[in-house]
Length: 119
Image 1 (spheres, rainbow, N blue to C red):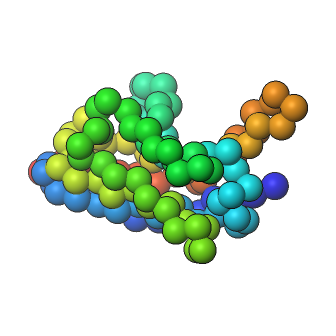
Image 2: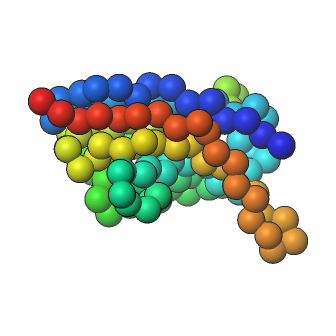
């Protein structure tokens, strides 16, 4: 089992910045990857960015150049720095970590944090 605790959401004007944090209850290296998803009202949850155990990083096309994912393995923490925020970035953001065991993926989720982009 693992718990993920998020923080950092809030209200920001278009063009503004926010930083989300996610602290895991166990070592980041115990997961295959860790990252962020988001879900806007009426839409499916989508991946935003993730970092693998080995340190490889991937971003959704919609956030490339604006969002940066980073981690501190000593603090079991992953951050999502979001710059140049747009109204379409507004969503509930979820921290995610997963493991793959015997070909089965096991997902762990944070409680979600609301990001509102509005003037």
